[in-house]
Image 1 (cartoon, helix red, strand yellow):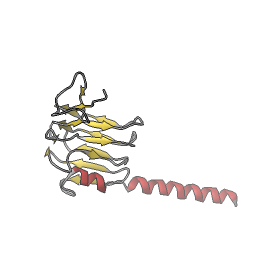
Image 2 (cartoon, one colour):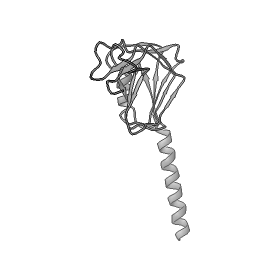
Image 3 (tube, one colour):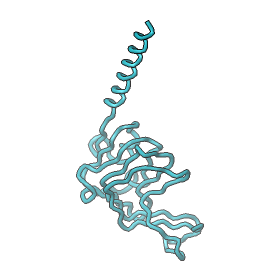
Image 4 (cartoon, one colour):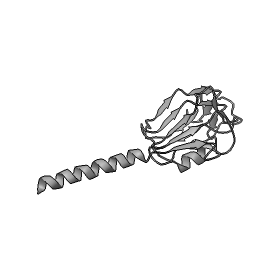
Length: 160
């Protein structure tokens, strides 16, 4: 009798695992949601937000936050065709609490930056400017950024 119970448990566990794998969705931007952030907000762990070719600007297409989700944000046809232009007013992504299953792939992030207190007019002070397209908060965040191009991005922090 005990053998039968173990076998049934294993089958139920295996079926639940397959259901979880099968439930991953692809969310299309801008077809399903007009902005990348809205696509991210709608996504659940395991989903992919697939961003169509184009230049993405404005609210909802910069300062993007995964909210700790294990999702992938990918371009449809590579970094040369999918551009996040932060318009010198924000960063591409903000990460805090994401892990190795949080993925950014195939995007060009351009004209992004972040300014902390004590830095005015986005001018470099001493050696306090460093390239930045994504802000990562402690504790150390491990995530995947693949085939992504960074152009004209900066951050300045008065403490560095």
